[in-house]
Amino acid sequence: MKKCKITVMKMARYADLIEKYENPLEHECDMEIGKVFIANGWKKPDGFCDSAWESISPYVRVLAHGGEGFFDGWMKDKKTAMISCADGFRPVTFYIEALDENAD
Image (cartoon, rainbow, N blue to C red; front, side):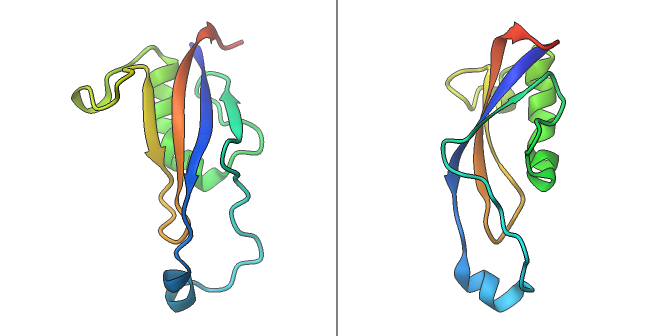
């Protein structure tokens, strides 16, 4: 299995939707643009958001096992994926890359 590099690329925050629909939170998302995580195979990296992991883990799993070419070549580099978490109030977009090194 390969390691995968996960980079936070974009973050959005929809204040109008939050104000209208969301209950107040004690802790919001703590991701930061440019933050990098390394997934050891398909295992969730330490400190990675559980909810975001649910959204991106299928793609990490495929890339870690050598899969490529999602959705009939949608990515220029077939060993990558660009996936956003499912948070409708503050979605985060991640760039996932299969690395050449193998997981431990």
